[in-house]
Image (cartoon, rainbow, N blue to C red):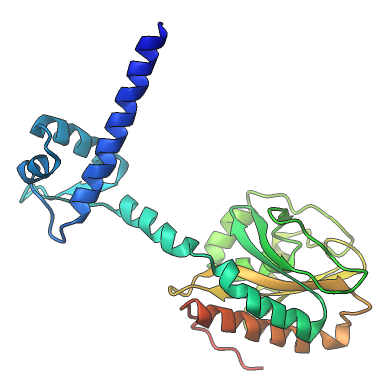
Length: 268
């Protein structure tokens, strides 16, 4: 195949893609939907071309057609894509002042992580000034079952969804304290729901403790979690409840600052 043929094919694909996006934008301009001829006129394209593009997008869920009126409107997939932008807004940047306050109050490194299928991913960090501290590179993945951020994010999901996730991962024994069964982990998640914070009790590394609380969006969905991490000699067992409540309160402040809501109120 010659270079000219390849370039021509690529150019045609780009043109079709550009037309499809422009057509989707045109469909989105109406609350009640447009007919085929209306869309063809708006696009300056032949009705047959517009119909072909619409059918392709309908098969993918980006547009819908009312069989009674023949009008085309935006589909659920387009809504999901648009909604992803709202979720994407940089709450990590908005949360940074609160994370700094938490470092100042508790003297330990604060991390932020999100749930990504069967792992957590760390997306932000404010380090403390201690010589001995935990530094997790941004983008690092961690285990759900053995991390405080993982457990608090899991606890915000329905049990059926949690079980579906856990059945697709291995509960690897990272230390002698790591949860080895789904049953024991589910029992702890019930407790996390009561307190509003989760604890990594030396489950990833002996001698290190972590406490986390979730951040919620406007739909009451947990979209991230903040945590503090440090050695057990500084994060003493007797202080866990106090520290956990402080982290939860700060997570709630972040939730409010981004327009989110946590419907379940927890008493200290």
